[in-house]
Image 1 (cartoon, rainbow, N blue to C red):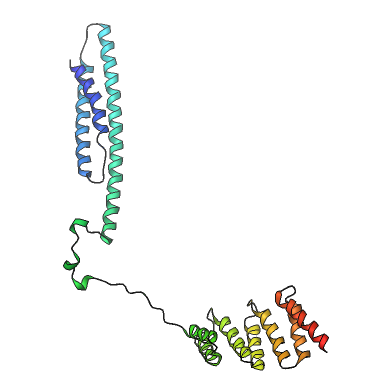
Image 2: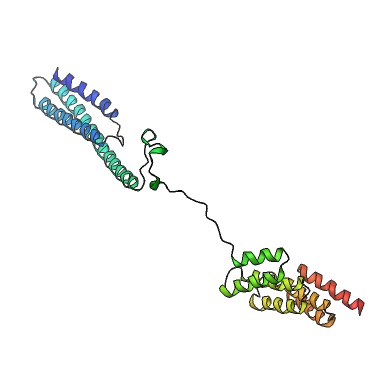
Length: 259
């Protein structure tokens, strides 16, 4: 009868263990289950030793006892393996709980049902985030004036911007708009000098071919056709195949036809 009882215990124990799923809400419960399981394994091991220590008169009885002992020992081994897995799960759970506790120190939300109504919140604890208002820079003001046709004012803004930060990312833009403002006002000599500043200071700027073209066009406005041809030819030699060089070739052809 005792052997049958032991087999029944061994069958029930794995089912009990399978129901013991470790959760993050009850580490203490896992420890308790583990202790109870270890106690039952210890008791089972003692019963196995007791069964193995009994003497039997016939060889068939001895074989039956040996078989029962082997099966019971196998079950004990399996249970010990499952206990080891449970210990590992508990370790992982404790590590997860530790990380959760650390993160909740930074931010611990209040449950919905416990959150105070707006009337209960003290005024000094409320932080109102106002939208960040970006103040216009001198460059922004200069560009706005340029688009509005206030060329003299735009040049003042752009020059002040360049004095403040000559290495600014928008410095080539400011230099070009200064030159272009002179051109739009019909101050071609000044525009030619400012376009040259762009060419000399920012030789890799993509507007350099346009600066050469505008210089030649400015010279044409000043009736300096030969000088204009030189600028157009320089553009063609340095930037062959560009849209600006194609336009320069047309300008040269027109000047030659008119001469």
